[in-house]
Length: 408
Image (tube, rainbow, N blue to C red; front, top):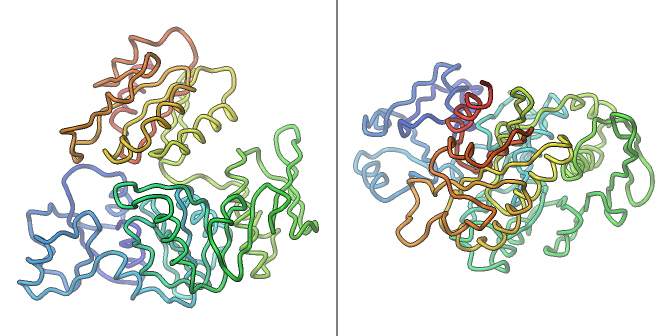
């Protein structure tokens, strides 16, 4: 919703918000643009011309109230489907990596607009493409009708809604049935069918693939299309799953006949979006803020920690975000968390029904349940640590507390 507000502001509209009173990081950029955010009980939204409702708040009580007052209203994705120019629309979907790929695509060329999940968006008056992060939750992305779709991966998620993996894959299939072109990470292309699939990745069997040669502090990367070398360039050392996203970015722009030298120049200093492996150094320690709520993302987090920060102890601090994920992925969560040197678990959020389940279920001899960040000091020794805070929820208060503790 914050990203949408940014776009509407760019278009010259007056934007006002209503939300919970809890601090959310995405409100910072809105307040810099003088957006007023009212508490929900103020009913200020009844004075608007159009009300756009986030999925969480789209409930019968609010809808009945808006109908009673004869308000014009839309759910978030319904509004976007009507508002955006479908001839310019490029959707990015997938279980993980959507936000980063949207930011990568939009950073690669200045003439494009975008909306992504870190609370940021930009709308140019004369744009070439509009890159839209398109979420599969409750099949919300089916409201969009893009020209092309980029798929980062297809791993069952949102298990509170999807019945099983087949149901999950069928949603993606329905989404791409009427688009012109699909870019898909090579190892997932067999899960979908389309007349025009372009695969990408680090596997030579991909339509587009990147081959890396390690230099002292960088990579020499060769981009191949159908096993023919088409572009070579130097790039900073990054983990393989980022190289996959980089390959998707280059494949898209090459398909549209852009000069890849310009693309690489524009993203040579690319910075990851908010809460996507954001790093702070505190004395000899590292603090990582990462948007992880799926076992695969926890796996990626540890791979990145080991890639960037060698010879340290790796500490997982994980807050489960949904009861459904806790129950469904319990074994996978435990399997991935036990790979860290230390692992700590916070309780589910207050918004979740904890009557029958608790994050305590993830505890093992190696995985400890904690109520406050101070408790981890009971387990740590005099060593250098990488602390990975992982959740889709905001953990900035816990991060601030840890910084105080380890900076003394």
